[in-house]
Amino acid sequence: MMGDRYPTARAGWTLTVMLTIAYIFSYLDRNILGLLIGPIKQDLGLRDDQLGYVIGPAFAIFYATMGLPFGWLADRVKRTRLVSAGIAFWSLATAVTGFVTGFWQLFAARMAVGIGEAVLSPSAMSLIGDSFPEEKRARPVAFYSAALSLAVGLSAIATWGIISWAKGSATIAVPLLGDLKPWQFSFVAVGLPGLLIALIFLLLPEPPRQPAVKGEEGNGVRDAARLIGGNWQAYLGVILLVCVMTTVTYGQGSFGPAAFNRAYGWPTEVYALYNGIGTMIVGPGSLVLTSWLIMRMQAKGMSDAPYQVSMWAFILMVVLCTLPFLVNMPVATLALNILSTIPLSMLTAGAMLALLAITPSSVRGQVVALYYVAINITGLFLGPTTVGWLSTNLFGEANLRWAIAILPVIFGVIPLILLPAIGRAYRLRLAALEPTST
Image (tube, rainbow, N blue to C red; front, side, top):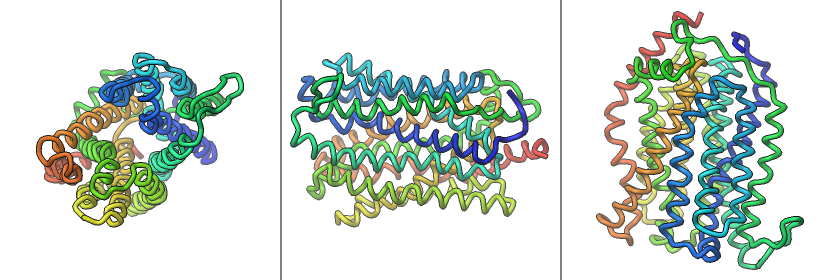
């Protein structure tokens, strides 16, 4: 179904809200395992290296690589049904995780969660892109992106609650399922509600796909490759900025609680709770600011507003993500760490809007999928690995905070130098689209 008419604002926002709820659940289902490492390790008799394989590669490899075929599907099939299937699959996989009895079962369940979640974001960005015209797209994209900040906060609160609860409960009686240990019940409680969300998506209307730019109407893999290859400086530049961001966030996020504990003696769950609540407040507010700023700049004729916001957010990110662990005061470190959420949120929304603005609807799902493959593989593999190596081999494990502090500088210097060139390439791509936008 093709057309140049967008759905009503009510229909577009209904779809955006449901996609955002699904995104929150995807993050919770993705991260619940990390919150329950202690009891799982004890009950299943796992080693730390086995848990590392399950938390990292089992999820990350399949989550990243399966995004490409699902992005291809999103450009061809009814996307609301595709999202419904993905939600149901990862939700069941999360619930089933509560019944595993060994390493390989846990590995398979984690892999299934990654496969299911790979459906969501390529389809979501394609749906939002076809639900709102460009001048009104900033707010819904920012709203969807806010799910990440909310989920971080909810996960942190869940960490605190689960640890507190587990200390006083041996088992929980669940109808039809019997007596479950707290960690088992947690997987079931987080996973099963997703099935209701999957059913709701079956009832949502599919927005019409918007017409492509003349000469860019194809929706095959070759068409997507031709588009990116012909405008590689613009695409690579935008994606590079977010790759650095995910490297920093995954690296600092993985080791941040441990660094805070080693430097200041705070229990992990206490740090996670305060940091999560702060992120849950600051993150969505930053995204509201981002959408307002971009729409205001576009109203003044600045067609490259998404890139301009992304550029300044990147500069601010390098500074604010470096500072927290250079300060030898726990409250100041925590406050600065929460404030770093501002540029991270702005870059998340700004870069996605920049990408959507230069990508035709016909291949949007595939391009967004490639974007998520790049940023997740880069972030998951470079971030934690670099921090761990620096801590062990350069600074010493007692000085983990220095490894965290230097990470944004290591990966941010070259992109900072390239920012003007990326901006020129991006504006050239926009200029090529302008004659067909009337």
